[in-house]
Image (cartoon, rainbow, N blue to C red; front, side, top):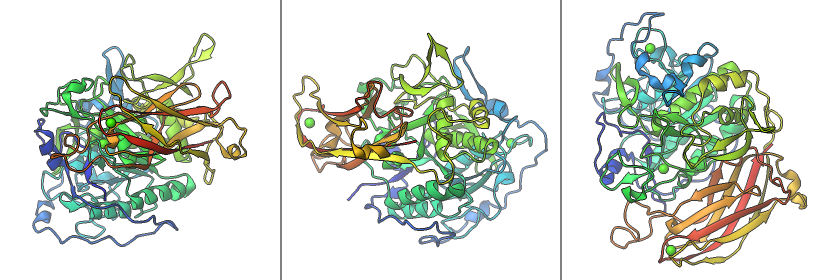
Length: 599
Ligand SMILES: [Ca+2]
Ligand SMILES: [Ca+2]
Ligand SMILES: [Ca+2]
């Protein structure tokens, strides 16, 4: 049995108020699904055309009374009155120390024309006068009605999806509201996530939406598992639908899946949002992106969030599976976007706001160069992301060269990766420019049907993990990939992503810290020790462990993008080290599998 909920990753959650209560209240406000059990088997086979929707809910009486609201007047070519307030669209300003996507610079080259983006979310007001020009007629699906109609909000509180879609693809230069990152992208919306719905039903609907229409090129997924520090496995049907879209979407070039990182970075003791996220005494418990199985699926683009100054928000989650960041409000300066009832708002935030910015930039890239594979798009985003907060100690050099190339002392300057920021903040103008002339810096370009080169090895060390308390007692185990093993011939020359499947028996899995160390000494901090499950260790009343179990748990690491398996020395030693950081409760490290994928 797995405790599982799916939550929208907005901040503030669902309301227009900038404040929030204690975490318990926050969790109740965010939780959209009840406790459920794990999903069924994968679906495999060919991509369904238009599958039947699972269990349509009854029509909600009165919902349609909000519509038809009179559409707002627009004026072709007129300046959007809120564009100036949309600081996230502007270029970064190094002198002022502010971040921005630079979308306004990219629009001269691309605005998302011809690119279709699916928003899987709560209700979306696709009839909003600033969104309707881009909404595909008949393309959306309303899971409450069980019909291919606009999945409209029924109340003003159902505001999340409209805010997300507005960030992505609100119309530009029509004299109304602001603009989306990709103001000419086509949008379809699926309201798979409904407040109060059972988790099983929500996940069924999400899997259904993911397989609903092969015309969708980019998927924006601004939701995630509960941000409570526990291990939440990915739903098997959702994972299968994403894997299928990566193989078969866009004629084999692969659909692109952008997922919000999560808002569980520091759940503060007193619910204050202004706490220093780096001060552990302020955090009741701390979630990491590696504990949400949906973010560990190979091929998902996990979007982190930073505020206008490029700082980690108090709720920002760390993790090695982050790719690039979008922008978000920090409590003081929110994101200006659309609201139900032909409205606008200036206070949207959370990882939910950052993900559609990354999705929007991908739509710009795809207009500029429609034949790019999802793997090459991933590389472009990593190469062109802008480093924020360059003095943050979490930055460390990768094996990937910067673009445009920089040289220092005869050596190429390398991109840096941060477990807080991935490769940095997505840069729309640089990404589009890179896409136009893209040649891969590692290996060859990926076309339809290009195989992912992949290899793996497993060891079963059976090591007891003791917890002496005064100092971390690391236990290490090493796997060698030096090319001497015949099985190594399938290994990639250059890594695109690394998976670590980890198994340990432990009565409280959150005691463990886990790190992967590459042959050249690059360290992926896969798991920190923490308190999990929303209650103290042992449960609210010393009850059962609520952390979940490390039973073949998959971690995904993006830090090693561009590395050679053998490393500079050629020895190819990859070390996993594990420590139990908390006295009391010890376990055994049973096994681990290391899998490399790349070109
Ligand atoms: Ca507009
Ligand atoms: Ca999370
Ligand atoms: Ca322990």
